[in-house]
Length: 319
Image (cartoon, rainbow, N blue to C red):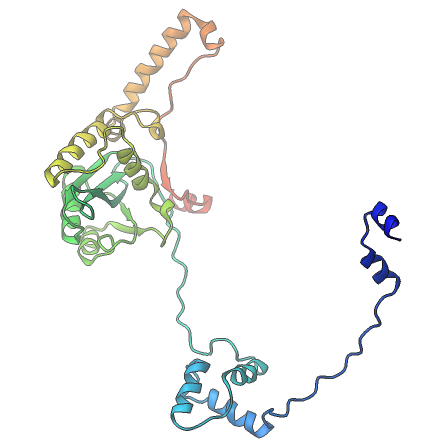
């Protein structure tokens, strides 16, 4: 049998167990525990558990309170068992409901329609020292309409920055932000309400709801010239001044047809695209084979920008 099982790759134990199966066990009823509570005792214990005094307390709390009062009706496991038998083993308290946050769906067809803003940390000269950079971005043009660097995050400073940006660039229809303390503060909320600006907020722990600001911060912090830390607040402000001038007026943004944010924001992109197309047309006429005999086309201008692309029904209603 041993060589046969080895040739077949089969265990001898499995062979003999299959050949001589063990007799089926009889389902004998489990004996009733001698220490089982009587029906009256179980009813009394359940009455305590569902009483107004203990209905909102955990089993362990109920057991401890009764024990402190010199009352012992059963163990905690017995209490759980009785509650389970009556379908009451889950939390019996009234539970507060927290409806899901609404998914923001915003769309902009032109500048000064939807703005997004956020705050990020800039490392200071010493460990644990940070400066707060506030940035407001137009999501259609990607133009930074306002920024400031401060020692701390403060709702008053945020309100001043937003009000200044409104005075320079106009008042947008919607301002979007995450749910930070400054973003949801009374100062900022009151300013937007007084001016008739719609407030929009990201869902908790959903960074994609504020993707434009997050992407802009990545562009800032992944720039080759971005330092490991700033020596002072003035140093951080000077760096940001130079960076945002470059970002607005020199950086060709892939999301807006490789134009600068300023070109889209102030409406010069159409003429620039026309000049680009003329240059491509001349190059094509001079050497069509270089382009595979296919007419090159300058990158298209953006038609819309959105935070969580709205559904077709929402787009129809908005139009």
